[in-house]
Image 1 (tube, helix red, strand yellow):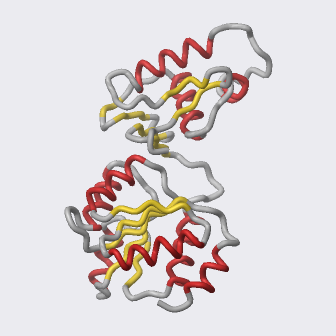
Image 2: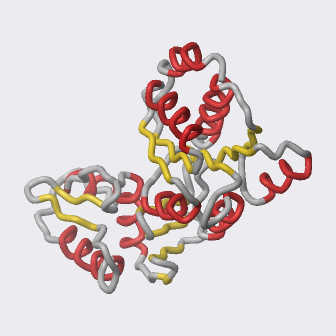
Image 3: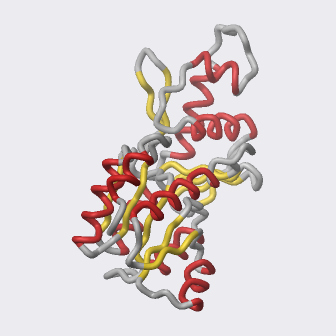
Length: 242
């Protein structure tokens, strides 16, 4: 496929993304992984639809590149399941099927863009970057996920592994802030300022109490634990894959 080196050089100037490639053809997957990696992006790879579904659920990606014809679970089914679970990561569908009806089916299944094979890498990387930009609008995000934990800001709902979790208003704000900073260490000072609107230390155990209550609701009875105490630093909400 032409233009790989030129496309890679230009793409390095753009923000680093974490991309999941779901492609069963070894040669096609190798080409994609090489080009995206040389573009400076972090790339995960799944060789079939079931593995792709698992990785898309367990880790946060900026864009998914999904082949349509996959073993164990086809690409459109994979996308439909993710959309049904509220996972709205942008998806670029790759397919040798280039008919209008094929493209329409892909988009209606929940795909955000559709690229037919064979393709130029320069076009693929441009489409991936466009999808990532579209997914980072100026307005605030309204849905977050860490592993199998989901939070919807507008609906004010929280669930884990599909089971609804009832939170008090302050617990919801605390979880929302932790999910916005998933994978990072959040300090007590950050929580006091952003969740309680305190710009001083009240010298109480209010944070410890709420963290304990929140942990009991989102971790008890589930595996693995997501809410971690970082001794001497603060707290971190993260899934093992992250």
